[in-house]
Length: 166
Image 1 (cartoon, one colour):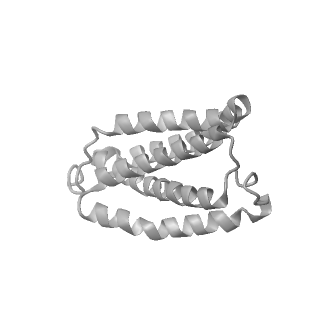
Image 2: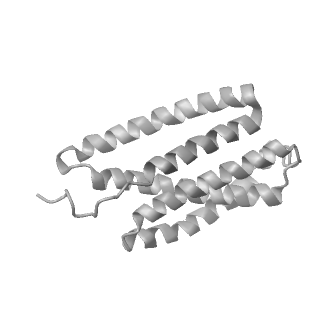
């Protein structure tokens, strides 16, 4: 979509770099929420943010309009805000919720499944975009993200000290 917007591939960093760096700055809000015991809200908000971006990109792709950098840049920033928050909060949740005797195994399993997910997501996403185009890809990712949000909604993370004492 960046190429469609007129940005050559060797210049994509001009959008990615500011989006990623600014999203790291926004991560301070996540840490503040976690310190206040609002990790659940931060997690649900991050998933909702990723969903919002998928819907936005899907609408843009389905419209047939030529995307602009003024639309794609903010969408990328919002995506990386959600993505980076999830990257930080999910291992924290695994660590908090796993019983102390199996915490290491739980984190190892999480990391292994995350790596397998990266592979499978890339392969399936590439096949999907080839088969259904960008609108189909974003419709599928939006549906999966919405399902993730629904399944995560009842989650009640435990506090730091629960299950961690000896």
